Image (tube, rainbow, N blue to C red):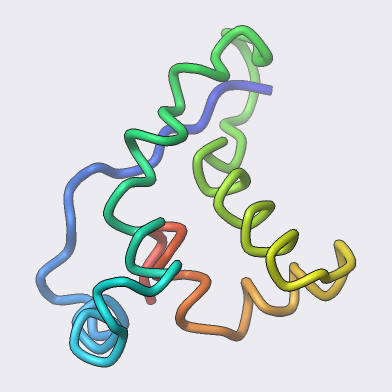
Length: 98
């Protein structure tokens, strides 16, 4: 499986990102992870775990953010997947958008 890379360029037309930037407190964990994700979990740090061949993976930085939020909330893997799929704050923190 190949290394998936997260987009480092924000999307001005993303309604979810705009909504979260207006609705979330700047000091919230979601805002912190959104702002610092690339510094905390650069995808390149995980490159030795992936092959040069094959389908691209979910970017490791996205997985790392979800794992941090999962631990903070005390959730199971299945519950974390549900939160990631349906909670705008989790997608915003992971830099995925709408």
